[in-house]
Image (cartoon, rainbow, N blue to C red; front, side, top):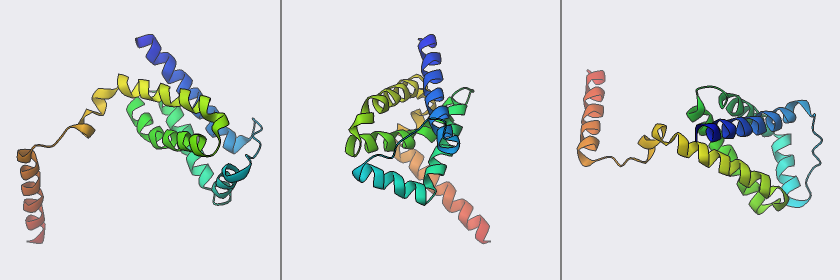
Length: 144
């Protein structure tokens, strides 16, 4: 399973570094899609939002090659959701690659689930009361 994790990290990192870098360097010709997909990409390009997404892709892709895989997955998660949504609703021709990317990310998320466990752990009433008390105590200490 460790080898599969290394392969998934490498493939996912490579995809995001290559396609994110392509937005800056234009080494892979990418024709503008037709219809609503083209309008969407065009709007992202005109507002320079595409460069922000590309920078996050490159950063997340590079982080997959380091020990900061949970941070990489946190950065790439919203990008992957948007890529999947784009291909489901506007450009289904790219859905196979988008599905592979999502599957690789989900596999890595599962392999690093211990780092994300706190996000889905319910807070008990005792913990919530203690947190509220601590916040109230800090607030009154600052006021005095």
